[in-house]
Structures are given as structure tokens and as C-alpha cells.
Amino acid sequence: MKFVLDNIYLIAIAVVSGAMLLWPMLRRGGGGAAVSTTEATQLINREDALMVDVRDQDAFAKAHILNARSVPMSQIVARGQELASHKQKPLIVYCDSGSRSLAAAAIFRKEGFTRVQSLNGGLQAWQQAGLPVQS
Image (cartoon, rainbow, N blue to C red; front, side):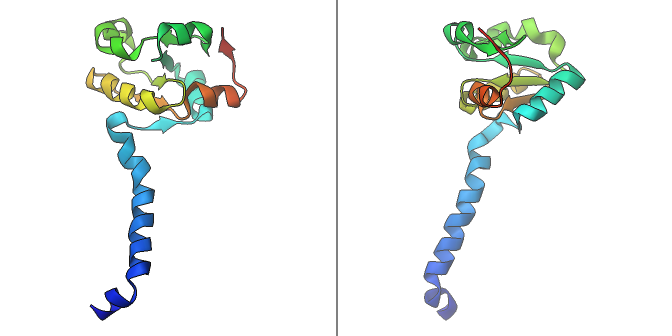
């Protein structure tokens, strides 16, 4: 007990730093794995992964990843049958920054898609990597 009292600040720092390391994993929730832009392009080229844009139609019309399908987040359950043939293929979900796509990936997973991943950083990361977009 004396050790704890003598080192309370060090123990507090250790607990806080441990919590900070775990926070991103806990925040991700049921969304599952996220892939980088490099991993996404490899999945597209090697396994014919499907890119799914979960932003609204206006944002999709302004710019989107080449050959991506637009399925706004509010329509995932209703339009899931359109993508039924892709349930066993890699499905990469993205939004502007990667935050909404984690939640969308969880919804797709509940709808029976087995290989769903979120694009880490979203469309912003894709554009920063110099990868092509369609306007």
C-alpha cells in the first residue's frame, strides 16, 4: 500500500496512457477492420473489391472513387439486395473522413456481408494519396 501511495502519480499516468492506447479500438466498435489506401487498392486489383460510398448523393456527385457505388448510410438496409452478389467479396466502405464508414461497415456486416472493411481516412485520405477520383 505504501508503494501505491508513494507512486500515485506514476500509476495514474500509466492508467491514463493505457486508456489512450485502447480508446481507438473501443471507439471503432463493431465496425471491424479498417484498411489503408494502399491495402484498398491491392484488394481492388487482386480480389475485385467493391468500393461503397456511404455519403449522401450530393457529395457522391461532387467526387467519388472510380467505380464506387453510392449507397447512402440511411439506405443500406433497403438497398442491400442490390449488392447481394458481393456478399463474399471484399467490400470497402468509405465516407469523407472514415468515421461514418465504421458504423456503415457494422450495418453491412449485420446484413450478411462477410468481408467488409472501412477505408481509413475516407475519401480525404484517398485524395491525399493522389489516387484517382471521378467528378
